[in-house]
Length: 328
Image 1 (cartoon, one colour):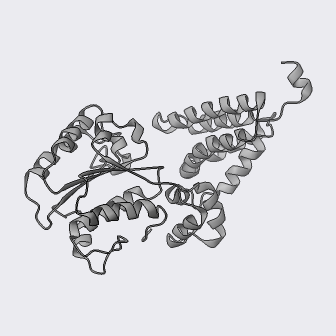
Image 2 (cartoon, one colour):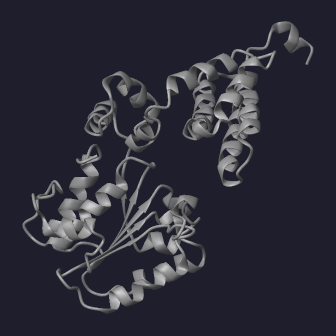
Image 3 (spheres, one colour):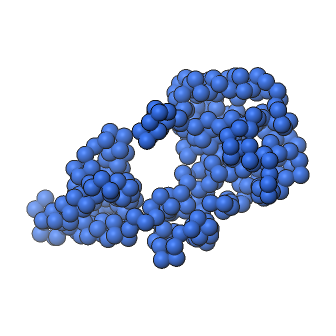
């Protein structure tokens, strides 16, 4: 996306804090994943480093030198901490599980020298949830306690409640919310989503443009149709067997991951319309689906077996006949 969408109140609050001349030295940008927190953090960093006279809407002026340096990863007054590749020579193997303590300790040198192009230095941590505990979290805490003058920390967090209380107490919290449908449409159109897929992605994105874009081109409508069929019962196992076969193909990896995300969400939606015993069944199914989805990728579980098991969990939602209920 090239523009900011949604969360105008949060953006205006941070802009007002900058203009007040008494900007707090540490902020947590908190909210659901994929609603634009990290994008805003980088635009906020650019505005802070570019100095006075910047657009209040965080727009980037044409030919902006500060932005060019940031995009090149060479701005000397900006430090971005993120998870690094497991193996720098083999980036296809994915990212490390956490932001390591040695990455945070590099801030000592960064903060120990004077700013080069600006009166400020900015540290962006995307995400603070990924800080290795306790080492990296404690190392960051030391910097937050006694920051050099002109230093601003911007911590992106999807789950601020999981951060150390001592980190939270030293930061101001800025809340970001899911986008509404109008904002979602604008964000997805700006990202080049085709008109024929727009309505479906707005629905499955649930206020998160990043989530919606991750599912673009994956026929989510087809997955939801299969989930709906499973929820009506699959006594012959035909639906789950075909789904397991198709999603276990190497070329279907992204659709497999989308299925693991959609299944718990589908069950949660079904639970909202239930009561009594039917609600209990749905809640138990939701817990089972969420646990399976959480472990499937991290533990590299067999895709075909995982899909078959997840489909069986969804099938628990099937209506139970009065006769079958009486036999329980």
